[in-house]
Length: 145
Image 1 (tube, rainbow, N blue to C red):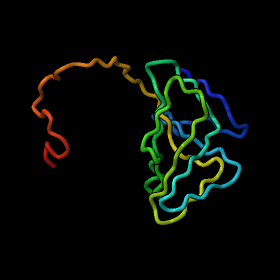
Image 2: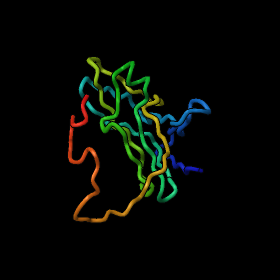
Image 3: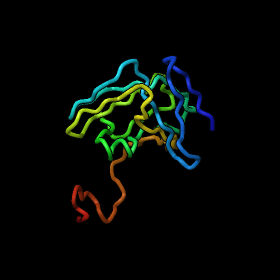
Image 4: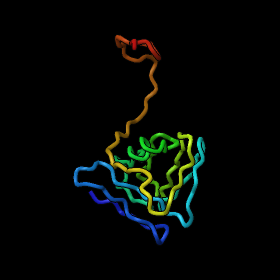
């Protein structure tokens, strides 16, 4: 599969997998000035790229980088970002600082990772009853610890 990439900013870096076995491709900050994220604060970080996912059946999913999350407490404000196959705008990454220290994002920093995955595109059908299961309507905590 090929993914078309358009640079929306001249200094943008293309997504890159760190190793041949990496599932995710690193996304890089594309900024002219450093961005400081204070504790508890959220900032939207541009990547300088837009992508063309083949229409229907796939999506791009943006995940935090485990090293940045575990070492510095920086994660995605939306937990996982979803880039739909029909979106053609710039990919922006909403970072949040869960630590007690300010965090500085610099141009070219690896800020997230993108994984292309298949998705099922069902039709949704209204019905009067759902099939029975052992769990039934049991909600949060109904299956134990």
